[in-house]
Length: 299
Length: 330
Image (cartoon, rainbow over all chains, first blue to last red; front, side, top):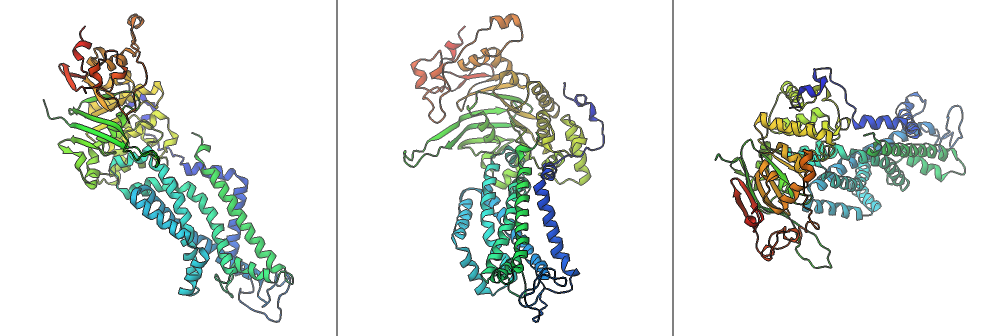
């Protein structure tokens, strides 16, 4: 019998060799992508500034100084003040917290619902799949603004509701993407092997299906965050989102746009920061897409 | 004769073929497996051969209930698998396992070898953490892999090594029956023998029963006790491995066997090959009577009318041919 322990000379119990998972491979590829790295760094810096920046400022985001009015940037107010004399830098930092939080929270809502919904529909197939995806189609058909206006008028303007409203819309696309991935995955032999092993359905979905759709999902997520932040800006612009004296980047841009002739600094800075964030997220998303592409991995 | 471990009776697996709306809503079906009966004794290795598309893999998947049979029964250790409720079936799966054709597709790329095997162990048994680690190492050693590789991922292994991992995973649930579906056809020739020897050794030492599927007679020859030859969803010949290959009964098997190169150059020079004309017919619309008659050199008009059944010609060696006597007159 040629195949015994003697076939591999190194059978002696050596130290366990660490493996390199596909995630680690992807991470190495991502780090080589300069634009993605810059995008990631910009995001980290902006997040840190939004979180920690207000601690180093002399003014709070809602402190008014009516005597000052809309003043251009100066030593006391680095980015100037708005028409109520509120410090623009403080409002920008605070708005960053709100915008990034909306982006993250609404995206996680859409991510959780979308991934579970899509994997279950795709894996179960048949009637359940048909019913679940028709529900998605129906929700898709609802005009988003009307949906949000209804929510806001019924429940009142509520910060949390904003997350729910945006998440409730964004998960639909996620569910469709995940379902498509799962359908392709279901034909793979390792899923059949998991069935043949007698694993429970819940385990097959959570351990075998979901981890293998996470690649495309991560890419789509980085593209969802900017979409969500744009939605928040859009809602705030319509007066349905965040209300003053709170601030968000969307709200700041709206206020700035109203006075861009007399006080351009109120528009330029928030718009620049917002654009930088969107660019960074998109570059990061592109980088992740390339990094997670299995065909690019050495095999 | 002792009670067989596996008994397959009259199994048919048909797949509905979806058709366009315009061209009739005809209920066309692919008759992938069309009435197969066979039984396998405990500890026996049955080789299942046939060309691509003859229904070998579907038969395997039907036996393992990865595909429900359209008709017929599959009795494993006294239990009819075709009748089990989903949860009973899930539990029963500990008794029968499969080794898949493509070791690049049959392992979850996101799980380490350790996780893959540990999951299989835990699928049917509660095991403590220490026992689990010991058992995973033992299984890896059993299939000729070092335990120190256990934290690696499938993409870090070669095809042969991956197939070893897949074998270890199948053994982890302690099955009584293993179905190996073309386990070596995706591997390099130099690796094939290693995996075949591994499987042969395991079945011998652990008393496993195995169905070994291949389209390659030479591969099946080494490992099987008996060989079943499939053609278009039916078994056309069944008998002891040596008998089927050296003294085949069915015209189709004769053609297959004649295509096998002989190791002895003297005999190889005089080897006469029987060349089959045409392609196998479509399983959607199989020919009436004997499925092989359009390509058979011995066919007579009756062959397109009457379906032959498996009949014993020698002891334990059966074939499904209307002209069995005449074909084997010499």
